[in-house]
Image (cartoon, rainbow, N blue to C red; front, side, top):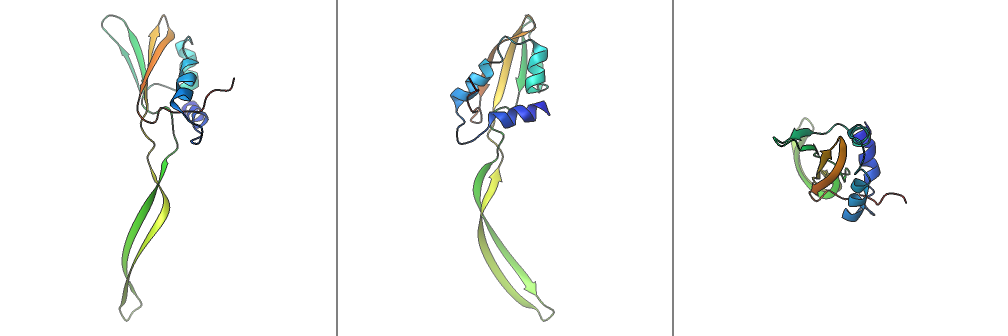
Length: 130
């Protein structure tokens, strides 16, 4: 639930930018791991290297709003008991494509967020309030 709240706060498509996303993620650097999980949610993966470096990865941060896209439909059907037939086509707007991907990986050192990296076109958000 907290992840959905964060995602909703991250997206207002008209004002969302990569710089805004970076600023929001940077505000998480320095937090204890427990606070990160409270704000962002349970990570999709938690990995520790043989050298002891720990990483938490989130697969779907950033833009959570589906992207509108046009759609075209075709149809054929029968009408009535006497067998009348007809065909039709139409176009509609909007249909929705899934949101673009955004993967964020946080490096954890001494039980705190040390840094983050992101990848994907969906890594956009509004800038945090000052």
